[in-house]
Length: 352
Image (tube, rainbow, N blue to C red; front, side, top):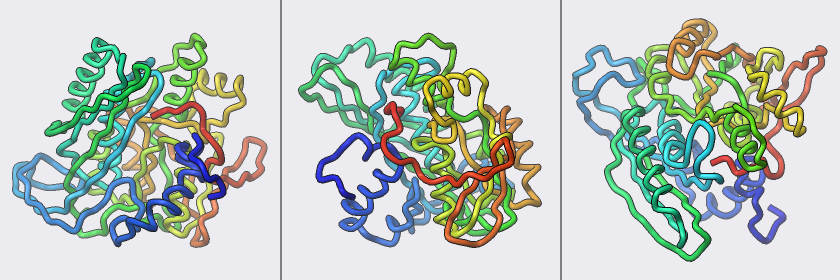
């Protein structure tokens, strides 16, 4: 990390963020759980719960199930706080719930903390809190505690959430993790890339479009993957698809090959990105996931995602080819190959 001061790129979710985490936080907080560097931590704590069907494919939906606790936390500083297709309250729930889901967990409880700058509009705050409550109900979680702080400023509103869930082993297989991809696996994305990024940027630039954010809880989608041989799940947020693929490839020690022509991008988002010189592969989302699954279960996984809420545009976009140091390539429309890396610099605008 060459910079001696924090810059906006440190919050991009790309290379600068990774350097900041490694050189400032990871060294001080080092432990076996944190060292896994997952979006949600699998805790060495067993829990017993009477619950409906979890990801692991419980046969009896009302039986008592023992599992492991999963925990995550996130902060949300999106500008503007209300945007086409969503708002800060919905974003805070979805971001936290989806991180729990990516470990195969059933989300259970959230905290809700707010940092309010002096001058914040109380009516706006009420709308955001109402949206958070509605989204929590959709996601199947309860908000059980929280905090509020008021600071000097110019009317900004920021949210922080922590989430707790429970995960069971999938039919005796290993827990889902970023390091689970294997040669021969199939790569699926659950829908169109770049919607959230384009929606936020158009609002920030006062460009009139009908592009809406994809911000959504993926609870039903992940639950519907129950019983399949899923190796990796990751929500595609800051840094976009390219960054997530590179991170998963490195964590798993594999090579990944994608096909650009089958990566789903809505035409109006593609046109918007082209106008501004943006690459949809690096544009952020808030309601999409990448699923890496064994070839035998790939068609079943695709169909289940397609029939879930928010998954109608899902597509198979590539494969895991071999064991190596984590290279990612995408086949271009003209038949060439392009190497993908994590996002460098700042992925404008701040989308979460």
